[in-house]
Image (cartoon, rainbow, N blue to C red):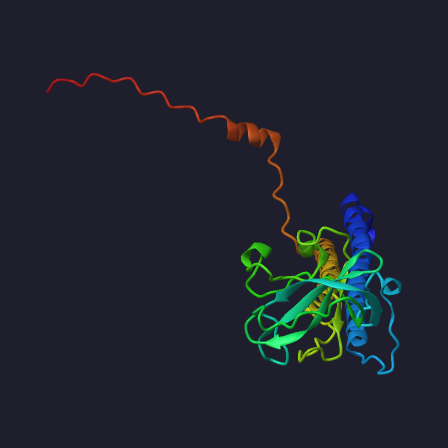
Length: 282
């Protein structure tokens, strides 16, 4: 009864199922691993740094990753151009960052967020940076992918303001090598509020993390659907064979005999009319 499994049609079905199930399981496991990695990075980002953590040289912590993001980095140089980063909320209050470019002793420039001030971005509110050579210690941050709300291009901001903190937006303002990172000073400076360190980009329990979890469920659903369809086709085939063996299927009409077929195919002869006879006159 099960010899139909060896037919070419069922060979194709079985090969497809044998390949589809491992592929779906692999993709589902991979998506689950991506979700677990993001959960782990979220926990690392939320973990408090030791209070007595020693600052390390800036160059030794680059490039910024999940382990070095938020670490204290130290460097030295001279402050230069100062910019404001508007529409940055802190503790639910609107305000702006005061960002100053620091030209380090190595010749490269690193953006330093010296603090946060409430209200609308105004150069008159931002205290001037210290003059001369300074040593700066701050939390290391990676370049941002998005920044100021409602501003999609640097050209939409007034001069002296910056929408996104990163080398890609600063390259047109600074004509010298830039670090692909920035620092946030963690001690109060000139009455400004320190900006807390943020989790690195593309980590944590964000929308992408829950997308990975959703894709995990979809791949496992595909496995169940493939098995369900195979079992349904198999059961239908078995039931058809059982009905044929039990004689429950309608029998095919027998072919007509050749003579009967010829007779049925020939048209009936048309009877010839009888000749008219003259009627006698009365």
